[in-house]
Image (cartoon, rainbow, N blue to C red; front, side):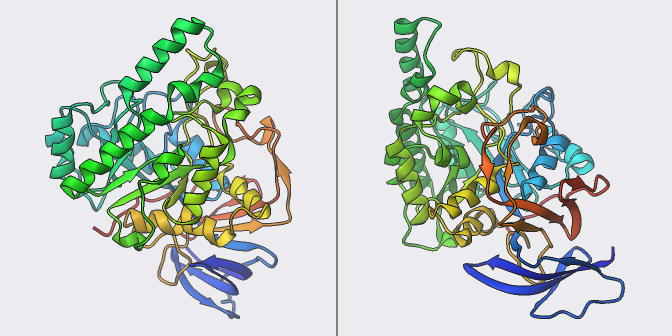
Length: 445
């Protein structure tokens, strides 16, 4: 590999904005300086007027491979991710088969090694009966443990309290959880079924998958983490009351209990069901304006640590079913950073804060080696953004295999023009380098 000099970018890193040149050499950021002399063999990219940020790290995606590849696969969705400025992802275990043994987990790593445009890691899936296998997970090579405490597929619902405590007590690895109380949801669903029959309105979704269901589950998980000393990360907060469970008076590196919010819970609220219907059906549900406002407040005051996507595509045919049959989840990786920059333009958040929550904090929280920052000696996972280049989401420019987006018709104020993965320019103004693949993420543990 040769070297690349990026000239004159406005770099966003660790709360600061500064104009610098940057030299990439052998996958690594070699030099950051005011005026780098260009080596004879170097490729030069003029980044005047553009922002440079670290490649985003998405800590929660569902890329559907193996077993569900009619919806998506690692190649198509990682390709969409790099076009959206996400250079590393952590994928969930609820594929077919589920990644609940070390052998099945490594099968997914092998697929990604051959096909992923972005850097990758995967979660090992806990169940009620695989503790022995779970404890074999290598903390330096695997992102963490994923537990479904609600809304699981197959046998992945961990609902045995004794097993749950054993898992929390037995591993030092980061445990990520989906928190919704299954019995509360079942009871609420039955009430809706009794009232509406099969024609349950979409507006019932946040009532069925209620605030109570979320809080009951997340508060129990936090109580157990405090009791056992486990390292707990709660995915996709969706309610105001849950935000009160988290603290912001200590540094992220010292937190034992952390939280994430997703793009869709920041963007949509229950008023949007009338227009968007099942296209914004997620678990946990998009809830009220009050909940949405509380999530923003907790994000900005650092009770919530990470912004992610929970990218979970389904086909249009599947999503166009009625409420009871339409699956939950939607595609987001291509549009997450542009959506957040729209919020920057609206004054809801700063670009420095977006970088903190989407780039720096996932790297800190998961102890990821040499990624998530624009620093000398770090991997050159970098994104250039043109803040003046507007574009509108259409069917024709959607890259997800499923071919749709909840943002269809939305105009974004900025465009991602270049994405580097491990120093390689893999995306430039709509064109991809299909020869380059990402690397397996490693961890400082």
